[in-house]
Length: 146
Image (cartoon, rainbow, N blue to C red; front, top):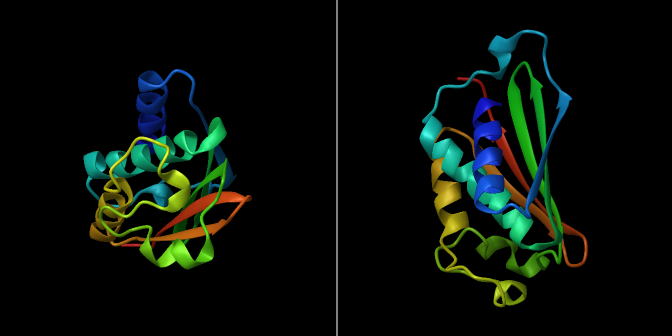
């Protein structure tokens, strides 16, 4: 959770118009259950990218981050209220240099999500996309116990 707060501070400092809200759905009383071994600086890059993208592609420049920790799994959801991604494009969103038709008007090179997926996978976690056109996008990260 500390790395999430650091990423939030970086995103909002770099882009004062962006809003990142971190929500704790289910947090254990034992702080040890929130700990995972991983590269803090790489995870910060991944979280920062997901927050930045969420704000960039939302009309209201806001992303909501939901952190849920259970004994055997930490789940983090990055949810925006943007234009969404068509189902047929989901298999490609993590490909290097891929840009969906709806994102061409925004600055970017199609590198961020590919890098984010590599970082997340290197940490022993997974990332998935949930999205529908007109409904926004949610990126779901799942960190199993180590």
